[in-house]
Length: 439
Image 1: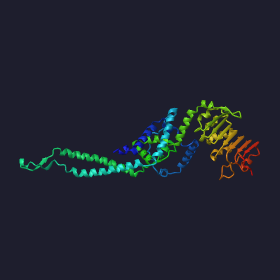
Image 2: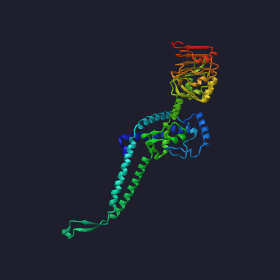
Image 3: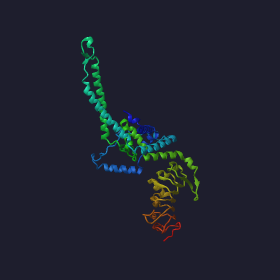
Image 4: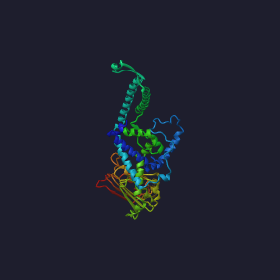
């Protein structure tokens, strides 16, 4: 009955899945992620809470019911542990969790391509139902023919003078009872197969929704899955839904980014960063970071830092903890796509004096640049154009009331209006146009 577990086209997938499932379930990162990772930043959480509280007053209970039921049912106890326990994760465990993320990602891409497991299970179940019907029909027609006395013919007429005898079958009663017991067991087997058939064709087993997990854990970016991957998760739910809940952590990019950040903090300790501090041309204590997968949190422990230089670091959010760098006055961003926490934006508006930005696309020229009211020096290097459809447009700089030095290295054909807006208080203006003539 477990042929689908042994068939070469399916057994390797199942064994690999079970192995990963066990490792994900026991991983310390799973517990930490379920207690700490959230798919929203603090501002989004506050906004969502306030909007939810406002909308809940005007929505009837009937309207609040979800239209689509999630694949998982509620478990009475929340999967949240005490904070001190969740925070303990050493470097080795972090590397193991990182390897699990890669395995799950590759496995998902491979398994979601086909539905061989689902089709094989459907065919096996249909075969079981047909086999059940045949056995029941055949045995039911014969079980009543088991009798204690049967007429039999024996070729002993020359010896006894008789050819036909009425024989007494002493085991007939036992055989009859065993036949009925066998039919009962086959009936149980058949009803199980019928229920499995109902489960297969009534539910959409080629799609799996993590909606309930997203709501319960706050990890909002866990994707829904399909095909054989979805089918295996449905099968695991029949055993224990907790496995799928803990496995879902390794499908989340938010959780993966959180792990990368943790591993980054393990690798770049505050002491290691202090060894990289240098005095730059402006006589400021500077830290330069190049091509890192993220920005270590330990950077914000260097309270003596005056200048921060980041090169080719993408998809990073500067947290509110940057406000601990009270001496920070200079920031250099070379081909970096960064986002700022609200508190970080306010801090930079008040403290930043010098900003250098080298960009290739509009993601690398952040909008918060135009709100740095205490900025004194701005250095921009990249392709600019007055036509928004062609290239990156330099927006108005009129909010930069304290700007004294403006350096532009670009391909401008004419001086933008944004430069004219700050011309009254500029002390120095540098234009490097790479040979392009100004009109």
